[in-house]
Length: 245
Image 1: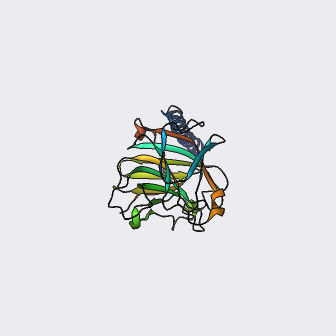
Image 2 (image 1 turned 120 degrees about the vertical axis):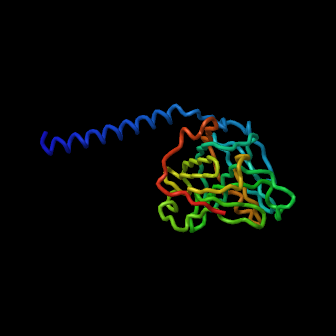
Image 3 (image 1 turned 30 degrees about the vertical axis):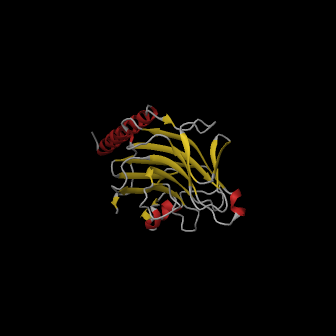
């Protein structure tokens, strides 16, 4: 066997193995036990927690609007709690709409130093500001709120989200490891032990005396979850996990 034949055969074996692994992964994902959390018609399986924010069904999506002169956030909250899971959700926000997808969130306790929060947990942020930290993770815990995981050093992640268009989020929460993708681009790979289990919630921000902002909105649809053996369906990520406090 000459050198060219050896190179060809080696290339063929590597290509075949890669194709087989890819095909296996696709088949595995096709057979994943996804469960729909939103039926596109009403809020069955969800509850409203908090203030006077508005959540309506429009175009088969949960459509959220802020309400002026509110002192407290509103949440569209799942009735069921989840620990380890994989979540998919499509999001579209208008203009400067400030919102987030809360996971493993819990009822606020009396010692939380804020009147604005009835739920808190890991908030996968949808950030309309020029810094573009959508897909990072924020802790909205009373007055001690802070970023667990920002995108300050990740220019690729900062460009993942598009305002005014539908965006696809994938969130994997397995043990202390939280991973997020926005439109297929990895944005977060975090290790943190603060929240182990809780609700999934969509945030409607409190709004001051700004009635002109009541018209801007956020929409959420195609909400699906894997809660049975989610570790079998994990997606590879090319950014390293970072442990944060």
